[in-house]
Image 1 (cartoon, one colour):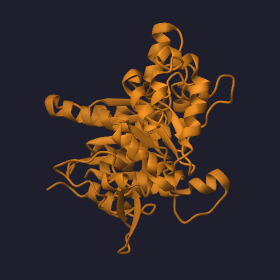
Image 2 (tube, one colour):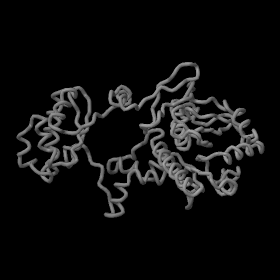
Image 3 (cartoon, one colour):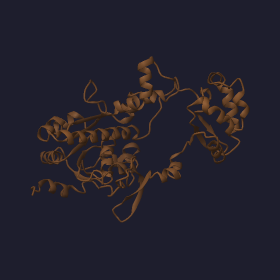
Image 4 (spheres, one colour):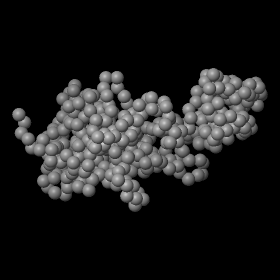
Length: 387
């Protein structure tokens, strides 16, 4: 395994911190999860959100499979000392607790690095280490989606802000944290010293829409989200087929792809129509053009359109629902899904690692741990004197 022999201690909750450590577990690290006696609250996501009791939370399972769980009540001095001993013996510590709470527990970076200067400390926060809101509580819908500007640029002008989906920004930020931790481990190989890896939801959100934010910085504004019928280029927009399926056309190079689109749509005369012959003309007459194209696209089911697009060398992607995604033959062939052990000799289907490797199998090796399932074994390892 890629990270075999690497000891990671995670003290995280909800999504962003556990997800970063979860990928390390998939990739072979020994990940010990410290959680309170009642467990990471993400275990009870549906009850917290809507008062619904379910036997498991698939989102929690995705980010915590293959870990070992240690349940500690950190209000107790002995438990705090045990947690500290675990972290000091690790290669990597990942947490998304707030800095003040970590300082009270003696698990802040400065305290730990003074005793173990080789420690790589991955800290996921809402707003970073500095500034007036550095200690503010945050979920990804707040710091990543809302405050970073994503919700506003995905909403129509003057409309309500666009909502997000659970864990969307958390998983992106977790990936950024993981990249930083791995870079810090590489640096440690060269210098012998660990360091603090500072990942935050706000900065990750701004980076995610970096195209728009750099436009704001350079030009003082961004391109607005227009209505579909007002698209400046029909070569890069969505169309609805006769059987109700949507597809995105991916013709970013408008002049190159416009004649091909006309060919595929059986509308060759449109290519030379002066109303639509240039990018500027198509933008000026976009509503009439979209009306013509929409009427034509409704004449066939999607399955008949796709080979025509391929024959014209047009690029496309279906607009899949989650139900479509889990049956998409390409997603299956790309190994986007894996079977995770359930501890009883069976498996359950889940989402796989986003990265695969030619030299390592990153299929999950172990089940999702029960709360505190490994407490005794892990603490015995800490107490056991070195040989």
